[in-house]
Length: 69
Image (cartoon, rainbow, N blue to C red; front, top):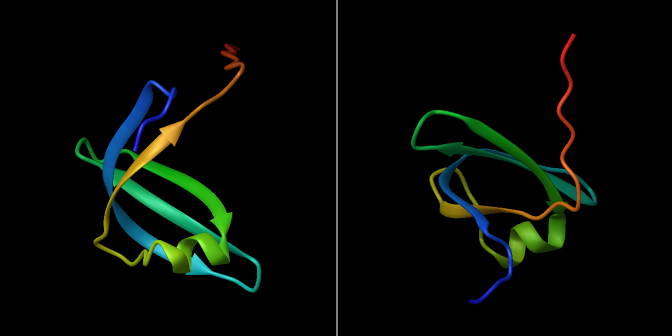
């Protein structure tokens, strides 16, 4: 697989909550940070995701905002 995204973060599926249409995937990185993604139920099933699956979080954003108090 090739992608233009530069932010590929390896991790492990910590939990997976599959609903009627969407699935919430919690990915734990090597540092213990959790990344949460909502994908379609169909995608989660097609990829065979389950707790313990090794995955990469691909982050592609056109803008990231930083806010301080």
